[in-house]
Image 1 (cartoon, one colour):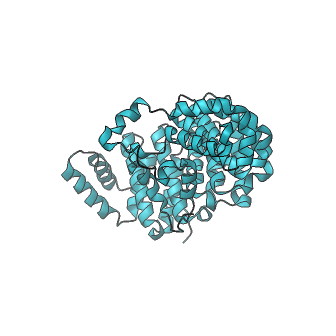
Image 2 (tube, one colour):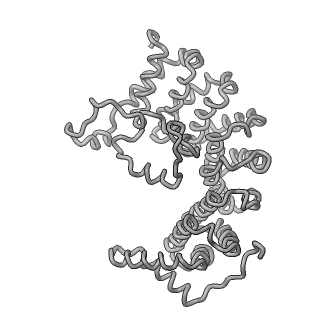
Image 3 (cartoon, rainbow, N blue to C red):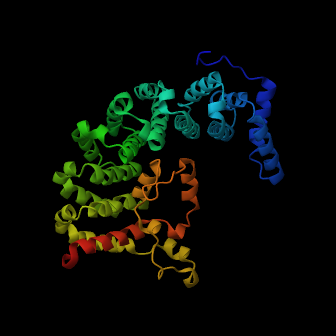
Length: 397
């Protein structure tokens, strides 16, 4: 049979049962939760359950947003477990209905759609959904901002999870110029998502940008005065990534970039400041260039890094007294390594350190489980930067 979407219609009684199950799943009662999980396990044995879930997500606009989103997240888990075993017609139905909700007025639903889309791509490959990226790029041409945001959000998630699947001729030669156009969008969310998407590509592929690097840099530099926090964070990340892949293109502008990163390292948003601070570590990986670029700015950089090393009030609270203070214990490698390079390693199919496979589904859980007192943060990044720079500049330091 063909891969055309089936003309599926839910049975009202069964649809109501699934909707009630979603409602009960939010009960705080342990036994109710256990019963819901048992029922979900039973329903997952039936391929049409995926149809009910995507129908609730995309069609039941009167349903509570939390329940619709939950239907999507349960669908995501079903895709992870069962996608290859579902009939082709049901897979096609799920794809088509999912995209129908991509412009939903509720941000939570649009985000859920993006999660489902990227999960499908991870499990079957972009080649098995050849119409996806052209469809999403077509949505970016719309004047509907919600549709643009939904499509761009899905693209960003695909780039984050599956950039290694994207080939220049089939995907990136079309996608990257489209993303660059949104660096100038009047909507901050679209600007941030566009830069984020290119950053995700840069983490695993650099060649697709070679032919348009000058245009890319021009667009990046135009964002220096952007007032949006997320845009600034993504800009700092992009410049740091480019130190690794296209340093030769940045050399002529390093003076201006250093001044910009000095400012951003002092940003009141710690997430942005951390992204900027990682620039110093990345620059230090090329000592000769680092010394030439930073020597005129060293008198300003050192005080900034020293200030950033200070414990915040939250840091002090989290130290939990002298008994748990590990200041005398040497930091572990994972405590002092840049978040950036760790993220780059995780996106690869094999660990650069030991060659073992990495399960991308586990990354978020691992990150959430980190003890906040040992997380890579601005204070540790500043200390690491001072340490490595002192080795480069010696007496000049």
